[in-house]
Length: 157
Image (cartoon, rainbow, N blue to C red; front, side, top):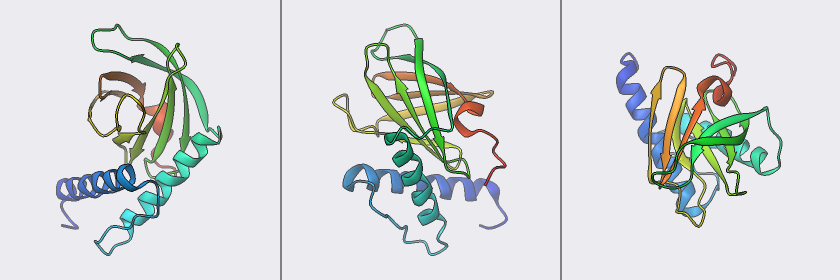
């Protein structure tokens, strides 16, 4: 598997999704993956750091995102703040004009989940890239963010 980047990507995505599910179910405790390379634990630590920083309002950047809170609602401009912790791991708080906000979580350059709110647990997601734009769905909400805003320079540690 070491030489096959596609298989490594899929395995890393499965590991990341497993961690996201564990964190969503039991909270952001130190969740280590059973696979022994330690990469999953490092990704979890990075995610915990990024989310903790967002909750403390300790951001690397502020900007805007396009968002819609309900099905059929047109996209509007929402405020966004990002805390990055390296290796494509970041947490982004997006605030809608009505004050509702959600934390979007990224690991290894992949969208993995959002925080639980009254709208849902944050794991009913779908996403894709169109160029540098990240197009996300969390439950009924939709978000569009620039990859450069979320990740900064991808070669940063």
